[in-house]
Length: 199
Ligand SMILES: Nc1ncnc2c1ncn2[C@@H]1O[C@H](COP(=O)(O)OP(=O)(O)OP(=O)(O)O)[C@@H](O)[C@H]1O
Ligand SMILES: [Mg+2]
Image (cartoon, rainbow, N blue to C red):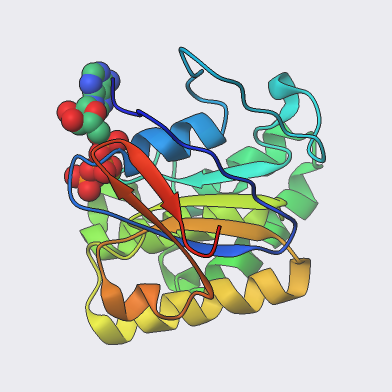
């Protein structure tokens, strides 16, 4: 079992770094938190966000550890996809997608295909896609894994600025202590067990 024991709560606006060695269960915990996987034992609920079937793309955005852009769609089409799924009209969806790309300095790549991007650029587009729908909770799995430190810090600055604007909560899985120290709240995983600092 990938998760042994995890008791936690995310409140609106919480900013949490999820740390732990490789294989400790960080990605699995994020998937459970986002409703992509169900726990075999125990329960999870989203009292503020509502019904499980409507969590995504409405309230929760994922930034996955693995590349997750849709290959045949351009960069801007990838970013506007969640907006279109939420029935945003096509014109507003395009405008909001371009704004999100601009926040991350990725607008100049809007009409490229994912295969034309570097790994780090693709990650930044995935961040833009997560921000574009203005979710209440962002679950980010090693979002800066492929970025050099200045770019990683720029991306974190952008994320924090967006969070401050929207009041969204975020959980970021990261190996990087320099990134983790930017978060007030830290959760630690070890062999499938979660320890919440200060709990
Ligand atoms: N789909 C799966 N089926 C079975 N076991 C899995 C599955 N996905 C992950 N695991 C196992 O669950 C454990 C936790 O994996 P997880 O991907 O959550 O770790 P992680 O902390 O995110 O690691 P990393 O830092 O390398 O991304 C590992 O032992 C892994 O082998
Ligand atoms: Mg992982």
